[in-house]
Amino acid sequence: MNNLNIFNFLLLTGVGFGVITYILIIRQSFKDKTFGMPIIMACANLSGDFICSFIYPPGPLEKYINMFWLLFDITFIFLYLRYGKHEFFKKLPKQLFYPHFILILVFSYFTTICAVDSFFRESYSNAFKFIGLADNFIMSIMFCSMFLRRNNLEGQSVYIAFFKLLGSLCIAIAFCSFTQMSSILYLCVIGFCVFDFIYFVLVYQESQNLVLVYQESQKEDFILK
Image (tube, helix red, strand yellow):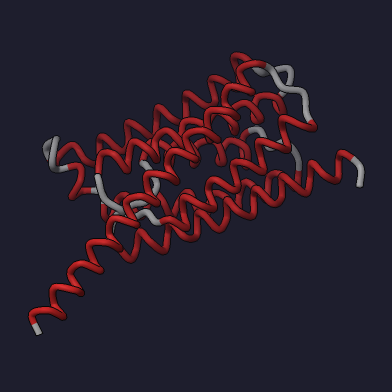
């Protein structure tokens, strides 16, 4: 197996884990009646995938792949608009919920397209590689932040954290081993692997705590009976 085949295998495996992660996020979000994708990342992903699909498609195959990811992005946006108000209202007036969402979406779109136009006009493939890896880095930080802010497992699970970590590791190995990488790209790759591992540990510990609490409650019920 040559390097290109290994790279493609790792990349497709990472994408596969990403699909599983997104499906699990959607499932858990509907189950817990909340949103499992941080809204900043939902808007950033929607903007990036829209631009890659309709504004600057890298190629015919990549265009349809990005359109596939758009379906997930739209679902995440729907989940936020449906269930996000109960978290938003705790800190800001409810009248600002939709303007706040529109502001994030608009800035996400123009930030992405301006970055492509301003800095990567000569090589859109490099632009989207940077945007993709940087996006994943920020997403990993946002997942940790979401867990710490909620201090519970609403919209999250050990399986989500596990498959997200596996996907990141596959993508990191693929790009670091078989493509040319600048220092900023190495920073992004190392960053999202580290924060995905931290996120997995946080979620795993919380799930174990819930198991212990449940077991203790079962023991108390048995004693009382």
